[in-house]
Length: 316
Ligand code: XMP
Image (spheres, rainbow, N blue to C red):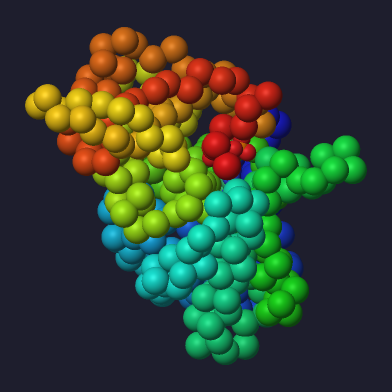
């Protein structure tokens, strides 16, 4: 924690939510990540059943993610509606290759799906979002130019829906949010989980996103995460990126022409800057062999060793 103990941050946040919301009802857009979950738990502590959470299944999530979210919220007794919007997102992404267009389309579709789901809940005046400090900073135009990336959780939902924003984590960095989550009773393994971008695997499938490419990446990602679980030092963030680069390979004397997978592992405090993790060779060797043997559609694995800046953590 940078300044205050988590207990105090929680107390102040709950009081602030109380005084902002009064007797009102709050909707919360849930992503399954640490930020929106901590937001939901905080708001639930403040106003209990006057909170309704909505989780949009975009089809861009990691393996098993949607089920895990549903289970966790059931355990916390927080009202949750899961909306299956997988087909709608695929339609929006068809033919799109530009990263900013992808992010904007996903953000806009998210708003539409959310609005439709929200319409089923009456008298709601507030929207709780898990915006954290780095999202706010990076979505601002840099030196009068374009924003670095349009973060999908600072989108145009509240204006369109005439909802007032409740953003209890807006002034906190990621490490502070994690401390707060632990204090609120979230499991350490969940709180320590890696950040995951709002637009999900779509920004890790470079170029056009298709169902089959998503399936390849989802499988590869699951293998990477499985192997990472055995590492003594867990990277701050580690993931695979499916590149739109094909190259020649050979399997049982037959030529292949398949895609390339990049591994990215970084150390960071808050995502604003990052250094590549020094991964043990035994890990790299093992994960690469598994990926090439188990994931159909790739025949080459490369390692991204770039720091941020000048790179960003996500490739898009
Ligand atoms: P970049 O790629 O900007 O990422 O260096 C910094 C950190 O933010 C995560 N990230 C996002 N998180 N919504 C989020 O909630 C987003 O749109 C988004 N884009 C990137 C990224 O995974 C990294 O941890």
